[in-house]
Every structure is written in structure tokens, then in C-alpha cells.
Amino acid sequence: MIEEEAGIVFNRQIADKTYHMGLESPRIAAAAKPGQFVMLRVFNGIDPLLRRPLSICRVGGDGIFYLLYRVVGRGTAIMSRAVKGERLSVLGPLGRGFKLPPPGDRSFLVAGGIGIAPLISLSQVVDKDHMAFLVGYRSAAEIIPAEQVGADTSVSIATDDGTAGHRGPVTELLKANVERAGEGRAIVFACGPLPMLKAVAALTSKWNIPCQVSLETSMACGVGACHGCAVKSSSGQKKPYHHVCQDGPVFDADTVDWGRL
Ligand SMILES: Cc1cc2nc3c(=O)[nH]c(=O)nc-3n(C[C@H](O)[C@H](O)[C@H](O)COP(=O)(O)OP(=O)(O)OC[C@H]3O[C@@H](n4cnc5c(N)ncnc54)[C@H](O)[C@@H]3O)c2cc1C
Ligand code: FES
Image (cartoon, rainbow, N blue to C red; front, side, top):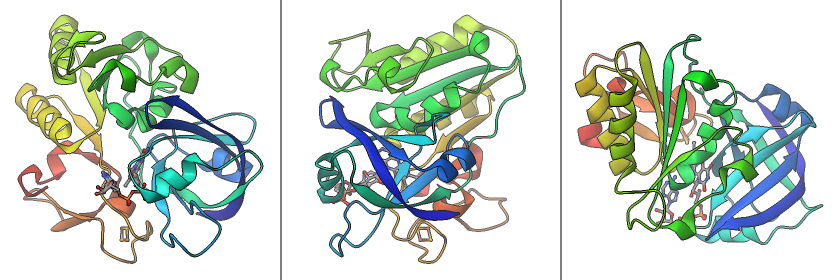
């Protein structure tokens, strides 16, 4: 784990309430694995004191790592006003990321909104010939232009209101893609709002397809010291609770007690 002041290379709005930030930290960029996150101090003062957890969206060969974030409260609003040249304290890379599928397995990457962030870095390392990248949004205004944030593959879109792509939840796109793919080994990777993750976990359990989910619980410390990120494990697991910051944020979906989340 590295703690350092990383310089902002750019910070720009790319969709409604959604920003893309590049931070220069060759050591964090070199160490990061898909699905890991950083704890970012959004302001170089004492208020707000707590760091905010953010997924590493991707890394560049230039020592820069990239974040994709949605403004939801005070910390992310402060972030959105940060400018090139400012330095922010970053702790990372943290947590356990995605376990990569063997070459040839079909991968279905399923994101809800800003949940696309950790899946971008995953999309860069899985076998693109056997991958479908599916992203759901509430409306077209929220669509994150995937090619502008490092996705070098096509992305299928679903919107709740039908203003772009498939009209309906992204799980409908997942069902259609899994049916079209037919027999063969497959795996689902998902990140997004809890109702979407629950639906994906239920479907993959029914289909008997392995599924890894990235959970975005609230976190105070990010390093296993506060127990604020505990989620209940499913029965049969070694521990009654997972610490999302250390045991995750990525989990096999069948190790989580979805009824208690
Ligand atoms: C491992 C991990 C990775 C994450 N990656 C990203 C990312 O790549 N991009 C991104 O935009 N966000 C990500 N998040 C969520 C992000 O950490 C929160 O949105 C952020 O901390 C909110 O800070 P704030 O001060 O703006 O909002 P606050 O003022 O703290 O909260 C404002 C509102 O947002 C809600 N909120 C706060 N934290 C979360 C959360 N974790 N999940 C859902 N709702 C929350 C609060 O309940 C409240 O309603 C991630 C979270 C985790 C745990
Ligand atoms: S956030 Fe403190 S233990 Fe996980």
C-alpha cells in the first residue's frame, strides 16, 4: 500500500454529474490491479477529514491512473472543483480485485451507471473476442462515453426510460446475451447499485454461472481498522462477515448474504 500526494493531470466533466480525473502516481499506477480502489483525500485540509473510496478505472503506461466519479455529496462535489496541478493525498491500491477468467471463457461485464468504473480496467485485460460489456443507465443524459474513459471495446447500453439503447434494466440485456451465447463456460462480473447486483446474483445463481461482484459500501478507513464496511457472509463461509475494504471489494456473489444487504 502506497500513500502519496498525486498531482491532478486533468479533471473534466464527461456526463451529467460525472467526472473523469487523471492523477499522476507512477507507483500506484504500476501496482494497481483491475477492481482495486484508492482512498482519496478530496481536500488538503481537515474538513472533510475522511478519505473517499474510488475504484481505479484504468492505468496508463505514463504513470497516470484514472478515476471516474459521480457527484453525490460533499466530498465528490469538492473533487469536481479540483484543477490540474493540485495535489491530493492518495492511499492505494487497496483491496482485492477481480479474479481473471481463463482465456476462452465468455465474460459478461455488467455495470449500473458509475459502476462502469472498475469494469473498464477489467475490460482491458479479459479476452475481448469472448466478452460482452453491458451498461445500464436511468436515462441517456447519464451515459458515460466509454471510449473517452479508456474502453477499447463496444459497449451495449440499456436505459430505464428508453432514451438510448435497450429500454429496460441492464439485466434484460444480460439475459439476452447469455441466451445468445448458448453453451460453454461463462462468468459474469458486475458493479452497480445494490438492487441491480441482487438481480444479477439471483440470475447467475439460477443459471449456475459464476459471478464476481464489486461492492461499494460506505468506508471510513479503507484498511480494515474501523469495521465500518462489514457485510454478512452467506452460510458456510469461514467468517460471519466480510470486510469489503480488505476481503473485497470484489467477492464471489455466492459468498454474500444478499438478504442481509
Ligand atoms: C470500493 C469502492 C469503490 C468505489 N468506486 C467509486 C467510483 O469509481 N466512482 C464513484 O463515483 N463512486 C465510487 N464509490 C462510491 C463513493 O465512494 C461515494 O460515492 C463517495 O464516497 C461519496 O462521497 P461524498 O462525500 O460525495 O458523499 P457523502 O456526502 O458521503 O454521501 C452523499 C450520499 O451518497 C451516499 N453514498 C455515500 N457513499 C456511498 C457509496 N459507497 N455507495 C452508494 N452511496 C453512497 C450517501 O448515503 C449519501 O446519500 C466507491 C465506493 C467503494 C466502497
Ligand atoms: S472501511 Fe474500515 S474496516 Fe473497512
